[in-house]
Length: 226
Image 1: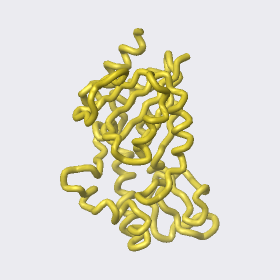
Image 2: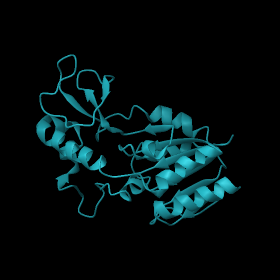
Image 3: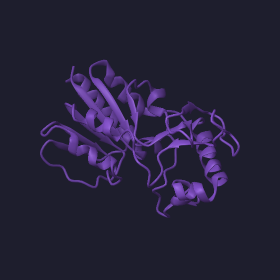
């Protein structure tokens, strides 16, 4: 069974109604990104950071997977599919994908500020005073700017085994995620789906200049029929 590795970014979730911070004004829901997504921001104002992610969590629980998420799940009918996502939502899982690696963490989980391996499912608000079993404050289980990306090595190993690579809704400008493409075997088919692609078609790289909800189902149908 051929292995398809899918790299997804904010573009696929945006079409379910999840806002991204890469808007024209450079703000994320009215906040400077470093205020709410960095260790320094956490150090300066835990309550602000927690409230920001509490609002994101509430929004996530109200939205649903879109056609692109469901189409990727369909690929598992004929392929060994592994998704590596920069997104912190659970829309891939809700759509039925069974192998999902979250590079930047998961919004519906919390972790201890004492032990980063102490992670728990968490769908409600995280508040100042919510402690782990070691009596340390809980924080969102997300990777902030300036922090290490602990799942990167696993993601690189997955990418290195790909027979087909699909890139969806990501500028491929954020590192280290952007460097994952370099781990893919040379010469394999690569599909890049984005309405405003920032790279050009060449060699085995095929550009599909469409939004995810339009481009992904078409590609998936084509792959399943081959």
